[in-house]
Amino acid sequence: MRTAFALLLLCVMAAGCGRTPGGGAAGERVSLRLWAMGREGEVVQDLLHGFEAENPGIEVRVQQIPWSAAHEKLLTAHVGRSSPDLAQLGNTWLSEFSALRALEPLGAWVGRSSEIDSSSFFPGIWDTNVIDGTLYGVPWYVDTRVLFYRSDLLRSAGYDSIPATWGAWRDAMRAVKNAAGPGNFVFFLPVNEWTHVIIFGLQAGSPLLRDNDTRGAFSGPEFRRAFAFYVDLFRDGLAPPVANTEISNLYQEFARGYFSMYITGPWNLGEFARRLPPEMQDAWATSPLPGPDEGGRRVSVAGGSSLVLFRSSRHKAEAWKVIEYLSRPEQQIAFYKLCGDLPAHEEAWKDSSLAADPKMRPFGDQLLRVVATPKIPEWEQIAILVQERSEQAVRGAVPPDSALAALDRDVNRILEKRRWLVERGRAIAGEP
Image (tube, rainbow, N blue to C red; front, side, top):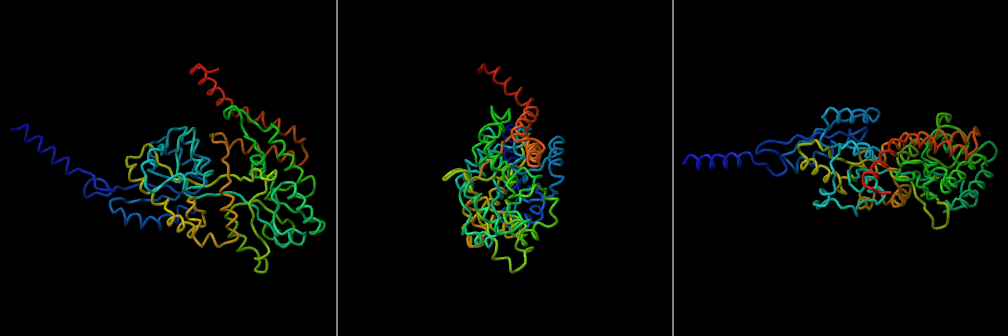
């Protein structure tokens, strides 16, 4: 009798402690912590009111973190076992945090989801979230680089649009320079930024790194071709050899014709609209980037931020619901209208706020052709070295081939530990 009573009591207790759909124990609310950065952290709370209305058993507490402090805070939280349940993570940080085993693999979660499908996202952006075959993030918003240009000056030089190949593009630049007059240039390529030369390298087919990302590939023929194209833009007087800190106001210089082409991202759509005078608003346009050859790789870099779950979360199922909700096309459109970040979900690009904007459409076209930079924790260190060695070549301090050879030596030193680990792993596995 006592045994039967004890079993009955356990059943009653178990039923009383059951989890409510989308919540915690019966009558309780699950409280989730979401960390988001910059402007995104300020506006995402507005979207989550609808989520909490759909899921009354879940509360989402958002902590807004400045980008300048985000990386260190995330690392400190991981070491101190105080990571949030979910967070916004720049996709160049995914490899580092996945290597630390801080992130929950998401393949199984996506496989069970009725809301998230990889085919609904830009392929190149989705790929940035896959590290060594494992998915660790779902794209939240996307970023890439396209060409901003003075359409009026291009027309005055005899061109209706940006040519598709490097050679024809350079011819167009020379024509624009002749029309712009002495003392003016065409292309603003800040020598203290690495993005442009990396884009040209990716377009030329360079892997950037070789041997399982353990050695530099910058002296290879693909990157050498791209580097020659890049350096010649300065040598031919088409681009001024200056840093962005040496330009007092790039919008004013663009307006007066000191330069008329600039590779940049979607945040500058609003800046150009605000900072250029009203009479200039019909005098500029955007374009997907040209490529090396006809029908070639007109790619750009894949950027943006993703939503991730942390392994340490005790409420992964509830946190996953937040990711699903923020990934819906209607929420991505609302997010774009709040802060200007471009949607990662392709369906959202059919909305008139994006589809009807002629300056926005080239971003949608370019996002179909984006490539991830190497997905290793050391990439940000390597990118700085790319900028430093490129600037030396542009300013004439060293010949281009010497700059690339030095860059490979620098990169090989950074990757020495990675190389040792890869070689040791092969030895243990008995591979040649």
